[in-house]
Length: 395
View 1 (tube, rainbow, N blue to C red):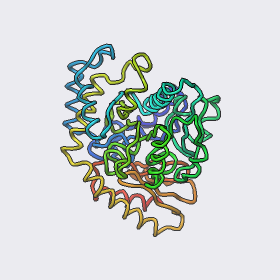
View 2 (cartoon, rainbow, N blue to C red; view 1 turned 90 degrees about the horizontal axis):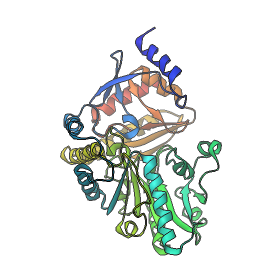
View 3 (cartoon, rainbow, N blue to C red; view 1 turned 90 degrees about the vertical axis):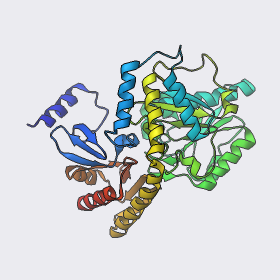
View 4 (cartoon, rainbow, N blue to C red; view 1 turned 60 degrees about the vertical axis):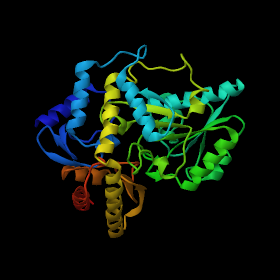
């Protein structure tokens, strides 16, 4: 028995069985490659589920995080700290939003967005029966609030009752949204590009009509950019492709590029009329380590022209996957934008992903029938060609 199998067996004895993990133990990474504990290298087209935007071993990022470790990691939110202040300024600049609350994760950011919407509506009319409209096939996280607005029943049913007053509409079907709107609606929540639900970008017309409904009724438009944000679409945030601004947005994953951080951001009109002192909090959120990571990530995005690379290589990936789609009758659709794309098959894809892993390519699914492509945002066209070669061998 090899050392990798020994670790896998130990994990299966000790860890709660909530993940069906692939049979590999990763040990380190460099650039767009991962290496397992037995020394085998893998081209990474998952990036930790969209986290490692800058790839592995970015020296400037690592040094910034190490330097903050040697200064101070945590003080709590009873006090100010400079990295969090600088991080707030940096993310406001790229998002155009006005107020920031830092969290530890994407799910926590969604929880905060839900509380923001309910408090905003409560301060207007004093009622506590407000409703949120979310989308079918959406995914917003595993905590109880985030799970309540996740539009996939199998994730929710064993944990019911969820938080109440959630209605579901169909993505890109504005009539289904209008049918759910009433005088109790306080927010309409959706991913700008659905990730786990199958790589479904929102149509521009759909977003514009939701924005109009929210403006007319003083309902909050909440966009979840946890997976599709931070450059993955070719803009810092996918909604910027359409020139449509939400009232509240959530962000995480690549925001910290490995350090677990998230955030929800809002316009001033929401920030000044929703959560007040004592309404929300977190022990670790916005600590100096997270703030230092965010600052360096946003600095490197600009310095290394990450968005330009996403647009150029993302278009090349799209063309490459279109060619593969045309070669195969079992591929029924290809969707996505930038470096968040998916190939939909007419059969489950688990075997393909496992074969690719054996051949040194890391891929993941989105639902049973879709292979999802979420590479580091610094990949090259040559990396796309290598991926395509291994994918073809694995199909």
